[in-house]
Image 1 (cartoon, rainbow, N blue to C red):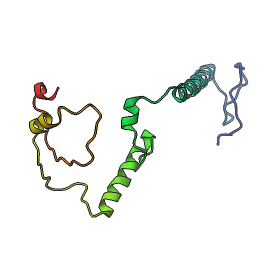
Image 2 (cartoon, helix red, strand yellow; image 1 turned 30 degrees about the horizontal axis):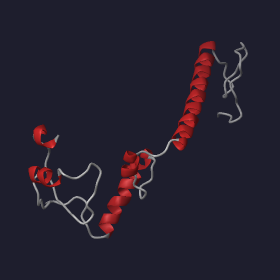
Image 3 (tube, rainbow, N blue to C red; image 1 turned 180 degrees about the vertical axis):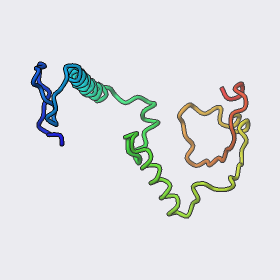
Length: 140
């Protein structure tokens, strides 16, 4: 059983033992030393990145993508998705309907909303689309 108090020493000695009390080879010592150094560098890099992000003003794109209802941690994506599905089911909405009513084709949509500025939003309009972009000439 590993001891929580065990710390890798600065230098290798022949009588060095690992956290389980077994003799440690020099190559294992170097491997652990390298891993500890890399972990230290990654931690320093994360602190620097967080400090830079805090000092930098939020971009327009970040403001558009901000969804305060969702947690920011990407590791929680699955849990956030489950919460969304449960909320839809609670409202009586089938999150995976068998049929989907389409009221606009992609070319009609592009023609109608091409004049909108990128990132703008019409809250009072609901459009139902389905399909994939077949040609890039109209879509780009």
